[in-house]
Length: 116
Image 1: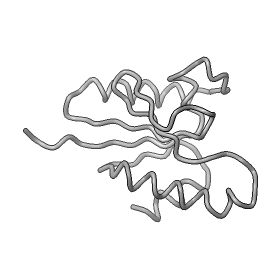
Image 2: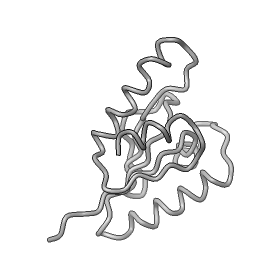
Image 3: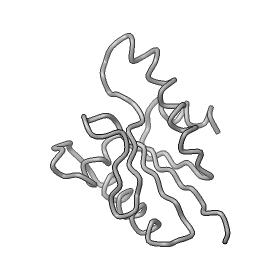
Image 4: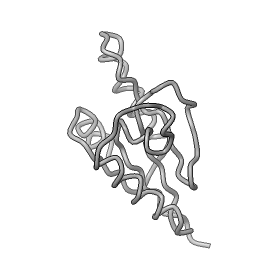
């Protein structure tokens, strides 16, 4: 059997589409990402991850065969500005995806590109 292709989407607020009870506000990009991720996950050739912000959920949750992982905190503190990127890159390494897709403009694009 061939190795699955690991695809990782990175978008802070997509968690709410997977778990509407979270109450996090969403827009069209989050819905699009959810649709693409869940469709890809239906194909046995793909292993799909979504890295989201910390909204108090479990570290790893699985919805429709998509692994949703806390990647970083949105807390505005000096500690988070220093250690947040380190934790984020650590989570990128844990996923160890073949393909990373960022969906929004933020500092996470820089750290994702740096990691890749």
